[in-house]
Length: 235
Image 1 (cartoon, rainbow, N blue to C red):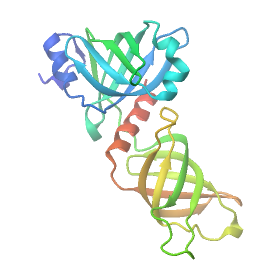
Image 2 (image 1 turned 30 degrees about the vertical axis):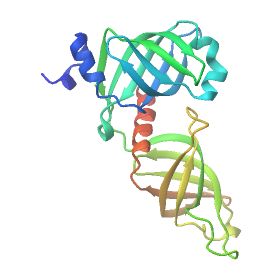
Image 3 (image 1 turned 180 degrees about the vertical axis):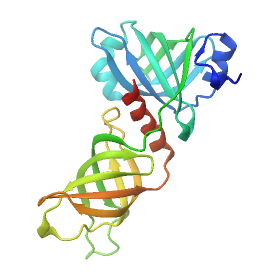
Image 4 (image 1 turned 90 degrees about the vertical axis):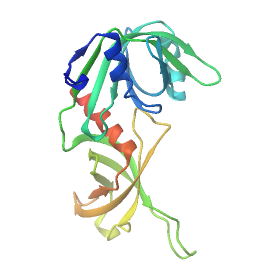
C-alpha cells in the first residue's frame, strides 16, 4: 500500500516518509489549543526528523500572541503536500519553545501519528478578501494615469476570482483589462499576494458597484493559499 493511501500513519519510518514531502517555505496552518484556540499561518523553516519542526512566525502573530505561544500548549499542524491536487497531512503535537532573536521562530515536537487526507475538490470558495486591482506598470508618459481600483474578492479559485468594486455608472468603463491583483489575506496581513490577472467579463452589480470576472495566470503560491482556504472550510 502506498503511503498516500494510509489515513492514519503511526510507524516512525512512514511518518518520516510522508513528512519528507514538506519543503522549506511551505505554508503551514497552525492551530494553538490555548484557552481561546488560535489559528495562524506560519512558514516551514525546517525540521530534524524524529525531534522537532521549526516554523517562521510573522511579526504580527509574534506581537499579538507571543504569551500564548510561549505557554507550552498542544497544537495541531496542517499542511498541503500534494501541490494542485490538494493532498494534505495533519498532526497533533506540542509547542517546545518560541525563539525571539534573530527572528521569531517556533519549535514544535515531532508527531507520534500523522493523519493523511485529500481535500474535497472545490471549484470556488466564498471569501471577502480586501484587494486592489492595478496596472502592471506605471504610465509610459506623464500623460498616462496609473490606476488603482480598491475592492473585495467575493469568491476565489486557483484560476480566477469575482472582484467587486465601487464604480458608478457615471465613471464609464473600468480602465484596466490586464493588471495585477493585490490580495491581503487575514492570515498574512503583512505579506500581500500579487497575481497577474485579466478581465474576462464586467457586469454591473448595482448603480454604484461593478463585478469583474478575473482570470489569473498560474501562480504556485496562490495554489497553496487556495488549498489552505479550502482546508479551513473543511475542518
